[in-house]
Image 1 (cartoon, rainbow, N blue to C red):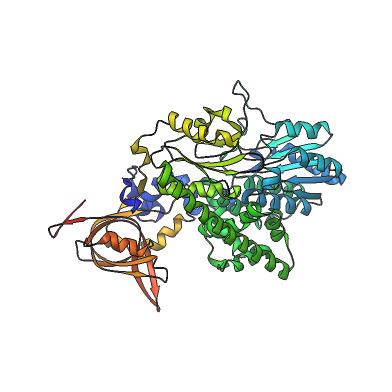
Image 2 (image 1 turned 180 degrees about the vertical axis):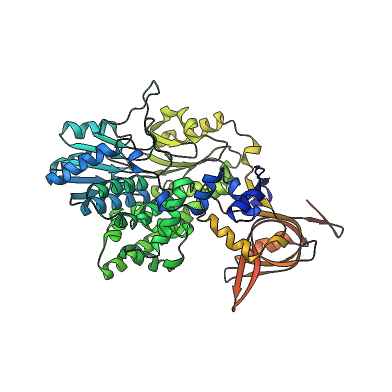
Length: 583
């Protein structure tokens, strides 16, 4: 079944004077509409969206506790005491740790790092890490991408006489009265704090670390160019942590990708080579779906220290060896994930397809891929999904949700079932005793208020645009909107009543379909559909008219260029007695 045929197609209807915007910024009214659809409003915001540079990043001094934290670090560096960075095992945590480590060392600090291991330590700073720091005679602990919820752990470190600095971007915990309850650290830099005046709180841990390095470098008179040359790691962290590519995040990724083309990081170069990518033409997609998963694979299957050691490596042969090891680990992770997805989908089909909330127990699945599997099942069924797997002494789970289901709130209603849980509207993590798995499934489904309409996916269309409007200049202009990603999605256009003149399946895996489409005005244009070709041909049958959601593209072949569309979704017209009718 093509799930897009079940989807509701929605057209953005946001209003503005698109001709006036187009004239002012020398863009087409179509591009002006696309920018408005991304909630960029007002001349200043549009100018920043189109023309913003590194100079337009926000002032790091606006972050609460930034100046006191840098003063403490300056004093510690000058005294020559030992500083330990405690990071996290995902991409954001790895990049944050890299940035702080490089930044502190550049300023002369006696710094080292500790990254928790996913299965042994769990997320964030814990008591064993604090004890180890105390035994190693560490004076100061600084966290990155974690620590904001570590109230007891920070108190323990303070009682042991250590200075504790927190840099994080996660939500600040609250007490029973709803008041913020940050840990009792010496300084806390986190844009989510209520008293923080930072203009854009939706930055990741890597960007918080990057901002801290900026102020440190000011204090130690390190040339600003050295700080700018680290921008690519803030960009990788932003994409890897699936932050919204809006406002400052978009500028960081846009300019970070440009910096990456000329990176000084031998490890990053070797990883890009190992993945057979072109350093000059990297996109946010490559970070999110190729480079990022390789960095993440070390934390999922072994230790995140491997990824960090690659980024810090200065020996060419060793960097090439580690990059290849990460690539192989990611291939192993992909195989494990696919096996888990196949098993999960089979379970749903055979046992749970009538459930509003899918609770899937995969005892033998590696816990590190449960979240990815949950995301894939959600895509297939468009329902909230929890994937559970056996961990050490209990069952661990990850959830991925849909817009109509606030996952964390629903879990709070059955909180007594969990040993530990946390999350937000769209995702969650938890641990639970195995005997409670069936009860969790039953109660989550009993209390769910989802209806059939909530399970119908929505496809948002930016502009209903005839194929006649497509030109090379428009396609070039659309590149102004890059980088695309969460919150700055690739534009989607749509048109209807296209006659299918010819169709053929391509590729050794038969996973691409090339169609020649003809408009009602007689314009013929190729369309590429990346899907299971044989299944599409079966679905097509005798039908010869379709509506499409598409993105315009230029096809280059043997030195010749031609316009084409990449089909993102389609609806076939049911043919009745030789006449085309929309089914």
